[in-house]
Image 1: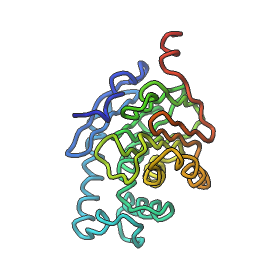
Image 2: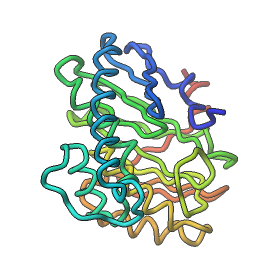
Image 3: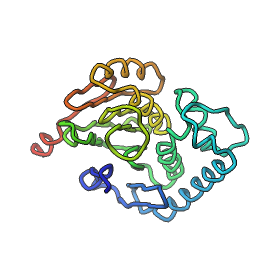
Length: 247
């Protein structure tokens, strides 16, 4: 059952080459100017090895639900996960999907000026044209019907979603989708987890937005719980069905 992959078949851009990279639990959708599958597979293997070896030496990195002590001697991906999760107030593994997407994105910059790296619903992308990212929110009436329009800004976007109803990632909340639009997917992943954990009913949506918008680097926040929707920031929400009809 791959319900978190729901949007893959309807969001692939026509101007990029798209392919999947699957290695153990890592399941990426990659869209680039040319086929970089072999290169990306090698980078995934490298980062997985670094993470697995670090977890073997320091299991707390994987197990902790709160920030852990910074390690000067850790691999770069581990250092950034520890630093960002400490800034947000979550465990380092709350950033792992976004971290993998972002590190792969950084690596392919010399090979593709535009790219979309999606890892379990967490996205790191750079674009020279407008893109629309669909929001999947389980049984919410908004699910798959609204999207976020992204305009080219010269810098990458990180778009990450935490859900208490979709996928296998740990969440203590009940939000169908807590989506963060930022400049970093590593950061957006951790913040989405933090905000998603705090949304248990519709009255929690606004406090979660207030909590999230104080962090630097946040462009926008979208939180969905059933028929309730909260939006903040520089976010353009579009009706996907109307856009498809118009197109």
